[in-house]
Image (cartoon, rainbow, N blue to C red):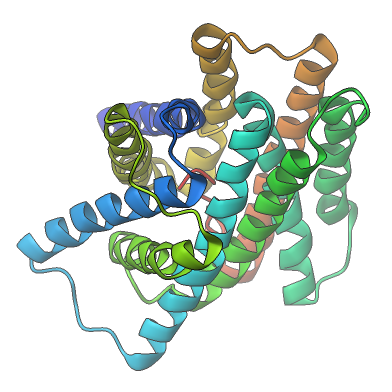
Length: 310
């Protein structure tokens, strides 16, 4: 049992590191002349090919019902794609470390949205996490007239909102499928969305520098396929709540990687605000877990919370 737990801890921490490096990989990809929509199309197309290929070789693709196809299309091609577009846009416009800290508003939002959907009373355990996260947000953002890109900030916050809706709705409609199968089809539909919308948005262009293919592959393989697969390993061994809390290493890695590799720094008030945001995130995860356990009688709760980098 101890060996399994240690394996779960290691897998979860490595997964969080992979997710945390994604904004840095994306930053380098943009430097080759790659657009946001092109990077996301390549990311999801590569990831879907790996996931679907692996499941096909193991004979685990399964047969989906029409309702399941429609649900996965909505979640992957709509909500997941929207969250990714907003997040990667934020990484392009503001400091990657700042983008990932703002994204971690999502656990507090999940706590509030879950209470609304479940029609439970707005207790302090529901409202508290989002209030704490918002307090941290004011420190992270600081003065908007101090040269900070407002559209980038709004994109990061929008990504947190989109991811919260994705979790709350997805946890209620995709429970009949395994996480691996769900992820494979979600990435497939997300790739399809960017293939269809890319020309409309005017952002698809393969004329970037050759190095861009390497950075796109890093986003797809290291920060998507391996990071998601290792998170599943960790969640299986530790439970989704413990794995989600350990995944808080993601923004720490993002901040350190941006500082070491990109030369970007956050001020001390921003770092303090980031710590407050993450405290609210942990509280939100625990609050959602407690409500799920109370309703389902399970230790780890009924609301799965995975890394937003997924």
